[in-house]
Amino acid sequence: MDAAVDAGTGQFELNEEQRAIQEMAQAFAADRVAPNALDWDKAKHFPADVIRETGPLGLGGIYVRDDVGGSALGRLDAVLIFEALAHADPAFSSFISIHNMAASMIDRFGSDEQRHRFLPKLTSMEWLASYCLTEPGSGSDAAALKTRAVKSGGDYVLNGAKQFISGAGDSDLYVVMARTGGDGPKGISTFVVPKDAPGLSFGANEHKMGWHMQSTRQVIFEDCKVPAENLLATEGAGFGIAMAGLDGGRLNIAACSLGGAQSALDKALAYTAERKAFGSKINQFQALQFRLADMETELQAARIFLYAAASKLDRKAPDAGKWSAMAKRFVTDIGFDIANQALQLHGGYGYLHDYGIEKLVRDLRVHQILEGTNEIMRVIIARTLIGR
Image (cartoon, rainbow, N blue to C red):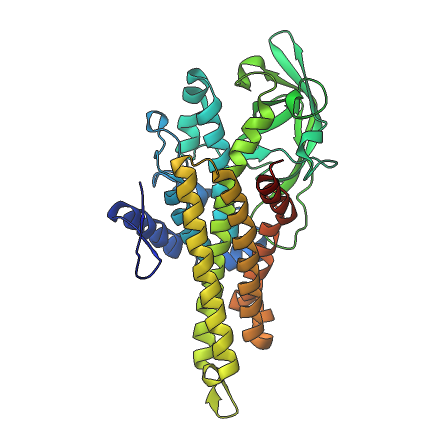
């Protein structure tokens, strides 16, 4: 579905169906996520029950084809959903994004048999999914991954470990990149690994700065047997599959930053309208007004940029990959900066958990690192500019 750009305002004018999608996600987030977000964060609780409630709403396979229960929506539709969910809790929204990235890779690159075997339970959220690319020794240099898969009869045997995996230990399926050939990207393949695969285990839950409601563990393969029929596409296709998943994933994580930043600005506007100093509400001081004005301007610029990048990916524009990288870099930087400024505007109260601002700062910081660091986004952008 296409959204038009209003020539007078420069804003995207969403069509009726997109507005309905946005309102549905906003209503769910306000009812089931926002009231619990601080408690989940404090308790480091993974709310699998509430995550599964998104399945009947069509959020388990947002851009998965409808023959396997997907919603068959576009990337701009997805951005609207993740932005709305993140306004309530960026960590919750980010996990839904990761699940959808894994499901979409199976939908796009899996055989018809694989699609019908895995996706109905993923789109319904009966099963949750995680994406496994990063390793202890290979983050930004993903093509250097060491986890190896060796064909043995009707199985592949995997050995190695993945690092920083969201949902590890809680998810039911893992989309795993492993080396079946020589060094470099052409030696990498992709496998769908069920949680009960023999030889699969998980490390301890990591103690993190943010995203406390998500489990983050190592995924460990020790002679882990995976049926050969769980290989996606062909041997050697894995790096391309992983990168294709990341284009959309970068837009999604940018949308999570956008929603979180909007929440931070909303909180700052409400607080500065109530807080008094030197006999006046603090939103009457011009220096503070200018800061709020800049925050709003930057937020709207980020929103338009992100929507434009998502529209390019929907249209399969030749430069969609560059725009995804630019949007991820720009929106996640802006999102963190706005949340950080909102904390400053709250003064000491911004540092307290109950106000929700410090959580937004902690949660949004990691968006500048995952799905490719913002430094790597600059490398991608620069290479497209100079023809490398």
